[in-house]
Image (cartoon, rainbow, N blue to C red; front, side, top):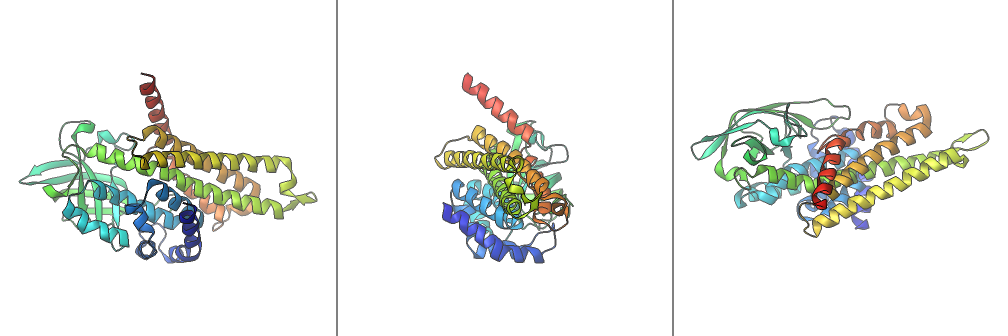
Length: 362
């Protein structure tokens, strides 16, 4: 597996970072997605293991966070189609998503339904042999420019049991949207559905079974969010170790001050602990354990919180220079904040862990 991580790290620095630099910050970078496909990395997302996905995300996060984000959003949007799509829908989209020729988005969150995904309100009303979707989605990956979205809408009653997943082409009549500007520029936006027509064969999985599709997808991708965090944390630690050995104060390198070296030791220990939690969750997923709720939640919670601390320590040790626009740590400081919120905020992960503990206790 180290080969996957090392290759992703190298390609991130040498190939993807220059492409990312030419893109419009915060907007969908199609050349970057195509490059991920050309170098075979998207194939791991759709045909590899959970462990390989985590290795990919860690390596790319260290080498090029923009490439990591592009790969993760492609996988998040495409995985429901791969895992639950009808053969015709899979055949239409998965080869194109794997090659980077097309781009996918994951449309779950709404203005009033973020962490509480079971309360979503986008309506899917019966229309002859299909459905009409009406409502709004927000914080949607690759919106409004994706070619296809995995969309979760309400087909009956309230709660989790009335949600259905659909594969919705981005050029569908009645579908519009807008880009959202974020702290760390990412291709994220809003989608508005005005009676968007979807056919019955565009249903992903079972009718009223969409909540399970969403949770299965998050079970896979939550530990890989932890891997993304580990990659950023490792990049911050590497920068801090190098800098503190070079920078002198009061006649000696910063690294020789115990207050400095002990901070780095604690950061390194937390990163390794996070990496092992991520690997455990991914290994369970590959072994067929379902659901992987507690392990996934632990991995995401610990890794994202540890990464925030790692980047903060690295900035403190670098001083004011790390606050300059364009500095690696300034970039990481903006990037590291969002993973503690998306795909289930840290508070939600704690709730999941506690709930699973009580279940295990009987």
